[in-house]
Length: 260
Image (cartoon, rainbow, N blue to C red; front, top):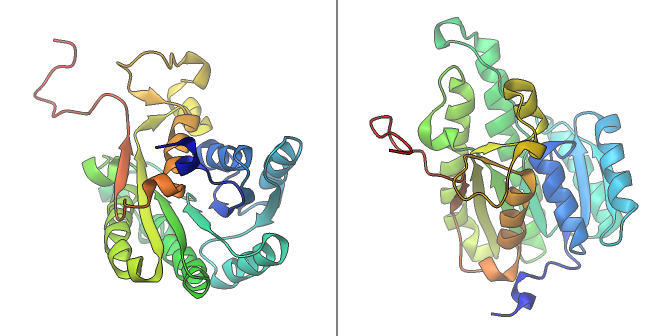
C-alpha cells in the first residue's frame, strides 16, 4: 500500500470542540495534510486563535465558527457557512464533549441532562444535520471521539461514561444504516491523553511524556490525531462501525498487578 492511501488532501472537515486538546490536534493535523478545516466551539474567541495558527502555516485553510451543538439552528448555520466557504463537508469529527465529577447519589437531574445533552444529543444533532448533506453529496466520513470510559465506566462520572457508551453503540448502528449511502461512521476511544484538562486535574503535561516508551498509559493529542487521519483516509475504507481504542498499555482487571 502506498502513501496515497493515506492522502486526505483537498477534503473539507468540520471538527467540533476544537479550541483545545484532541479536537485542536485533529484540526491541525488535517490542515497540515491539505484539508480545509472548520474549527468550532461555543465561544468564538476560543477558536479564532486556532484558525489563525492554522492559516499562518502551509496546508489547508481554516475557518473559525461559533456553534453550540445542543442548538439545531446553530449547526445548520455552521453547515451553510462551511459549504459557502469550502464546499460540501467530507469529514465530520464529533469531538465536543463535557464532564464533571460527582457521586451518583448527589447527581442532579440538571447535571445528568447537561452532560447527556452535550455528549449524546449533540452527537445526534451534528450527525443528523451534516449526515443528511453527506448523503445528498454521495458520501462522507463521520468520526465520533469517545472514551475508554464508555467501555470501562468511570466512577464519579456516570453521565459521561453512559453517554460515551451510547456514542459507541450509535457509531456501530449508524455505520450499518448509512453504509448504503456511502457514509462511513467510526469512532476513537482515547485513554488518558495529555490535554489541558489532564494537566489541570493531574498535573501532567505533554512535556512529561516519553513517546518512545511503549510501556506508558498517557498519550499525546497528536497520537489520537494520527488515528483520526487514518480513519478519514481511503486506507480505512473497509473499516465501519468501529471505535478504535487508543490507550497505550491495556487496562487489565484490578486482580492483575502491572509490572509483576
